[in-house]
Amino acid sequence: MRIGWDAIKQSILTGLKLDRRFDDLKMNQGQILAFQQLSQSSKNLADFEFRVFSQWGEDGILQFLTRNVQIRNKTFIEFGVEDFFESNCRYLMMKDLWSGFVIDGSAANIKRLQSSYFYWRYQIQSKASFVTAENICALLDESGFDKELGVLSIDLDGIDYHILDKLKDWRPGILIVEYNATFGNSHAVTVPYDPEFQRSRKHHSNLYFGASLPAFRHLASERGYGFVGTNSMGSNAFFVRRDLLNAVVVEMGPGEGYRDFVFRESRDARGRLTFLSGRDRIKEIAALPLIDVISGESMTVAELGL
Image 1 (tube, rainbow, N blue to C red):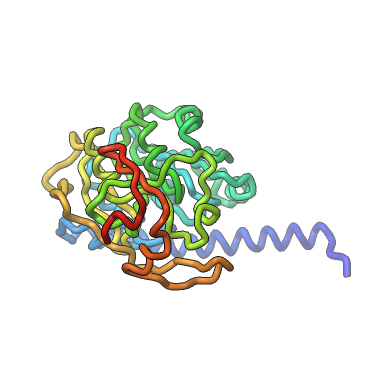
Image 2 (tube, rainbow, N blue to C red):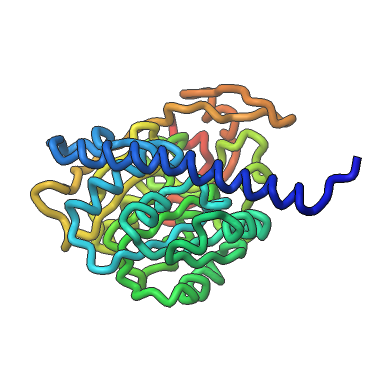
């Protein structure tokens, strides 16, 4: 049976309406949760978590931080967003009317974003590009934003440390980075730079990517940022520029705030989940190389001694 264009168009419109109605429900729920935060008092970011469009509880954490940190520009840049439907900053855009610029390596993902019901409603720009240390500064300049951003969120599952290292001229009030808890909390290490890094191709386990939390803490501290905590799942770390810290949002001391992965996403060579945790993760990628970002020395994952 041949399906006519009118039927296809109606199906698309119906899907868009359902997307919007479902999102309206989530937005209303988020409003209630954000209001409830006003009565909370805690120095633990995870206590403020809630999820509307973020993968874990980042929506709630960002509501807490943006309410208590004096942000001059309500702008964000987020990359590694896929189609942006699930992301750290979408709720900021839709609830608080922040302006954004997002980047993903997949043209199909960006096309889906640009076809969404919300793309025309808000101040958001998007770009399909594979991010490297060589092109990141030019890509971010395309946003037209003042370099004193509100939020910068980096989640590339790869050369994240090397990308952040290139962005010394950008001064976001809040910085979010995904760290690799497999590398522990004792060594400031990252995977070596490779402009073509793709997580699943580097090692089938999906455990070999990014940098340790101490590596990001070292770089961020040198740039004038204080580490203020992580999400409860042990994946994202949050930093605030030190001139914006206050009695409510405070910097954590050395060694504090680290969380190990809660989730288990390791895979075998056929792409099947293997649910590794603890030392079993280290054994899986033991021979792979790392770089100590403080000394510049090379080492293997096994040499972390975890």
